[in-house]
Image (spheres, rainbow, N blue to C red):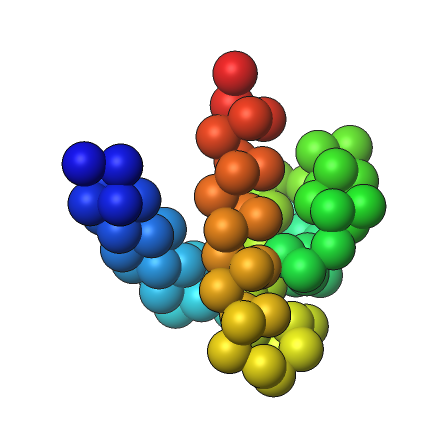
Length: 88
């Protein structure tokens, strides 16, 4: 049961990520504060992202994460855990 829920959550997060990437250039062109993408591979950077005054926070699951498949998976898991704990 938990694995199925986790897969669904990952799919939703990836879908949202796709839309964020699609609209990121538009968001950056506005005159509102937008920070650079936050590496999901760093607990420190994830925590620091909550201190920003930015209108948008973009979490990077690709470019800033080491290329090993295990690292990409760990970054996704770290971000999911971070978001679920931070939203409480």
